[in-house]
Amino acid sequence: MTRNIIFKNVGEDLTFKILPDSKAEKVKLLTDPYLLPDSIIKRVIETFESELELGLEKNPNTQSSLQMANTFVPKLLSGNEKGAFLALDLGGTNFRVILLTFQQDGKVDCFVQYYTVPEPLRLGEGELLFDFLAECMHDFLGKKGLLGKKLPLGFCFSFPMIQTGIDEGILVTWTKSFNCKNVVGKEVVQMLKHSFSKKEGVNVDVVAIVNDATGTMMMGSYIDKRTAIGMILGTGCNAAYFEKVERIEKWEGKHPGIDEVIIDIEWGAFGDNGVLDFMKTEIDKDVDEASLLVNSFTFEKLFAGKYIGDIVRRVLLLLIEKNVLSKSDLETWTFTAADVSNTLEESNLEKILENLKSKGFLKATLEDADIVHYVCTAISARGALLVSICLSSLLRRMDKEYATIAIDGSLFKHHPRYETYMRKFIATLAPNQKFELILAEDGSGKGAGLVAAVVTSLDTSLLHS
Ligand code: GLC
Image 1 (cartoon, rainbow, N blue to C red):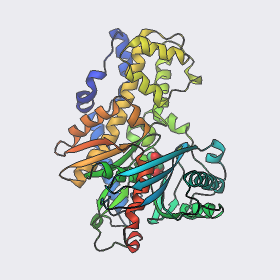
Image 2 (image 1 turned 45 degrees about the vertical axis):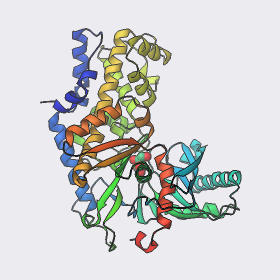
Image 3 (image 1 turned 30 degrees about the vertical axis):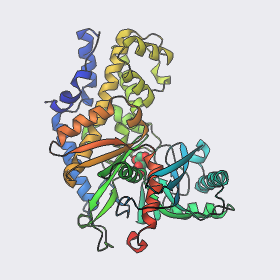
Image 4 (image 1 turned 180 degrees about the vertical axis):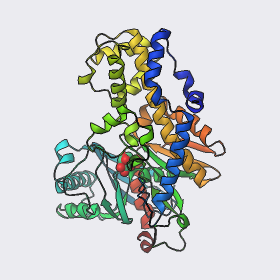
């Protein structure tokens, strides 16, 4: 089988510095399943495109693993927005409250305050989580002298939801490190409003609920008007893009005058119906087994920040078992996305070795460091390729003269090679599309505030089904 795409774009990084050929051959053999051959790539592309179509259908024969959720956001920033807006951003272990103030020249001032969501709240009773959000909001408004003020708020809720309107979202399932009781199936804006109503002085108006990918797209449009896709590549992974309303068969309440609307793809769950089983390795299956929500979020578990380190660790364990890597008690280790990034940041094997030793891999040698670097590259290249496959399909589908892809998320920000790989892969997979990748920092939360600003300038009857 040929491996043109991956080797053409990453090949130079997939080499060993000092490893003897005999050992290198063994490592290559065991990591081979991660270097997807072109035949598999072609199948992933076809599968993504058919799932995407299926997800837009009204009465599909089978259920797509892509939710293709309508966000009801029909446009990006016009540049004429005015006033002050709040945003809440919930999705990771950090929760943010943000105040955005539009200046005369259209520029936006941002004030961001971070709060940590303790684990018992992430896994406990849902109402307590929302009460905590209300408490943070109260603290924030108090600090900014805004208690009692009725400001519009955009709620960034980075979980799969079904929206029936721009300010209504029903949680489909928790993901990542959240699993609160009694929220799945509930309308979360109501829950948030209920908790706000218990706090004196929290008098804000929740005008929009958005996913972080949508927020990032909006933030991207603030930086570059040609933004057509928003993507999160952090703990989880997901994207949003502009879809032509005429292609959204399942949207019954279409509105005249709206040509395009942002669709939140929810591609983290791509493959949950088994359509990607053909490309999963035994290790991918083990990572799923060990995760908080087994049998779900197939796609993001192949590469996203919460999982990439563990995939590497399990490949290293396999290499130890096959006597290729020196013995180490990796069972008790955690290898994180930050460890992957640190390993690839270094071209000096001595430094990589030092890092490994500081993690407890005391018997590691320079050859081991060479192997770890190779494994991190292979797993990262697969991840960058998988997201690039989906992004290229979107670019071809939208077929814009020029499309900017706005990206936020810790993995994209900190991984030293992901962006470079993605640029190369996308250029190879969508050679006729002009595109740019930009970092839309803090896009999720700030973007939710920007959506609130867009929404307040629109006729709200357009924003529901
Ligand atoms: C998960 C969530 C999705 C979110 C993504 C990135 O995939 O389901 O809604 O956008 O993580 O945070």
